Amino acid sequence: MRLPRDVRGSDLQKALQTLGYRPTRRRGSHVRVTTGLNGEHHEVIPMHDPIKVKTLASILKSVAVHHRLTVD
Image 1 (cartoon, rainbow, N blue to C red):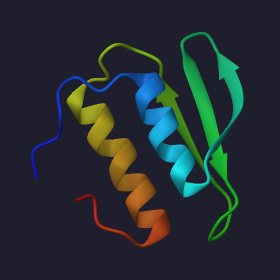
Image 2 (image 1 turned 30 degrees about the horizontal axis):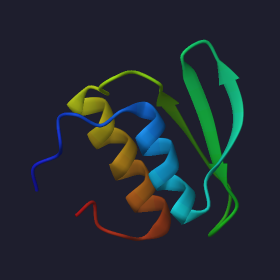
Image 3 (image 1 turned 90 degrees about the horizontal axis):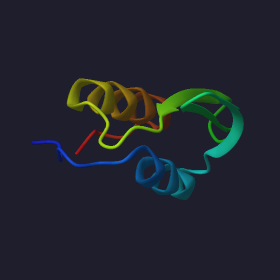
Image 4 (image 1 turned 180 degrees about the vertical axis):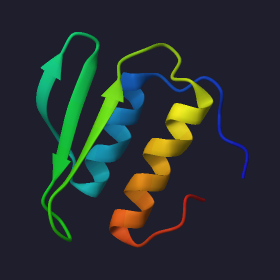
């Protein structure tokens, strides 16, 4: 699957809210989001415009593994 090249940090944060992630901390240009579904899981999202593709891939992979989903 080819990842989009124009994903903003705020858009990713909103998308992760559908999986139960809520912002818990902000430091500079990074936001930490946490979910309690399937055990506690934290992820740090850079609020950049756009997020680098490898960073986005890493975040999506981590979220997918936690929720037992595929990245697609």
